[in-house]
Amino acid sequence: MAIRLLVTGGAGFIGSNFVHHTLAMDAGHTVTVLDALTYAGSVSNLAPVADRITFVHGNITDAALVDQLVGEHDVVVHFAAESHNDNSLSNPRPFVDTNIIGTYTILEAVRRHGNRLHHISTDEVFGDLELDDPAKFTSRTPYNPSSPYSSTKAGSDLLVRAWVRSFGLQATISNCSNNYGPYQHVEKFLPRQITNIIDGVMPKLYGSGQNVRDWIHVDDHNAAVHNIIDKGRTGETYLIGADGETDNKSALEMLLQLMGKPADWYEHVSDRPGHDLRYAIDSSDLRAELGWTPQYTSFEHGLAQTVEWYRANEAWWRPQKDATEARYKTLGR
Ligand code: NAD
Ligand code: DAU
Image 1 (cartoon, helix red, strand yellow):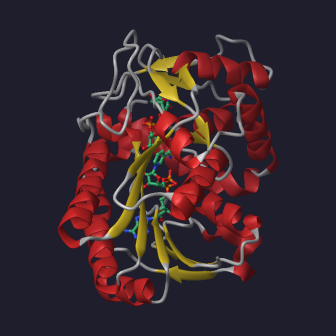
Image 2: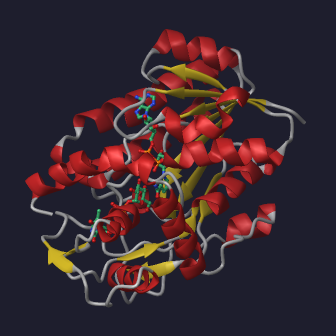
Image 3: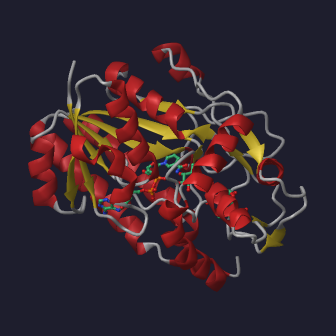
């Protein structure tokens, strides 16, 4: 059935890929993007589909605007967030404003209009796991966030749960692991190192590089989100992951090899304060209930495609690069 989708944060990394994915499905859905175009968002992410969507430049904390837009759509898919841990350590305030107040603003509008909400969240709400722990995160894992970013995301999830229970909101939540793919801002680990290597600059590995992330291609994440919107049970939380556990040092070595550099061509820099050790998702509930499976089964193959995308789209990332590296320089990283 064709639905009118309101996509918050649709000019960012995952949100813009979601818009591309949605239009490629050709299901007749209409898409409106609401995005504040912070440093992390760009209309250029939506350029290939600009004539097929409605773009609204606005803030999710603007209650009147959010109320009007929510009233005009069937389903709200809420991606908008401040998303970068390092930034949350230097300046937490925008994280509280957008991730908590922004989500609250959306919840109140959805409550008034009685429509469907899907809230996008992260595996970081669960804190971290030991390297040698056989356990993975499940939807029963208690919340234990570490950073200002992850604690504001945890807060936003708890608000959604409270609105479901107290007001009967028709909402679902998904918590996904680390995404990679096209249109990811160069502040994030993989695009930062890909663009450093293109520039002839040594990649930067935080601390020992033993930290483990559970990589998933952004298209697999977005396919799961569509499954949840179509078939998910309201009130439910779904964990999305593709069994992509890789330590940062190994991920970097794979990247160096793909880009024709020696495996030790990187430097260790100071560690992120409070750096989460390991994330790992058990997505068996999602797979069993909704029949989702990831299409990108080889991280190396997906990474090679991503490298090619950054090589082919320098005009897209170049304007972000200097300011991003200047920010890292002030942090000594
Ligand atoms: P991003 O930083 O690339 O994009 C965020 C987008 O939100 C940008 O377009 C930005 O302009 C917009 N935005 C920020 N504040 C806003 C506001 N107040 N009003 C309106 N728009 C605003 O983030 P991303 O990596 O695409 O992450 C999207 C969502 O997915 C976030 O909720 C994040 O927590 C979640 N998530 C990300 C990952 C990951 O690996 N990147 C993994 C799991 C979950
Ligand atoms: O797990 C999901 C989360 O993944 C999302 O909720 C976040 O929005 C997203 O940013 C991501 O968080 P991380 O902090 O894991 O991602 P980041 O790309 O910043 O870092 C990945 C790992 O790489 C982490 O262990 C820190 C390390 N790192 C990062 C940078 C930028 C480095 O070693 N060197 C770097 O230069």
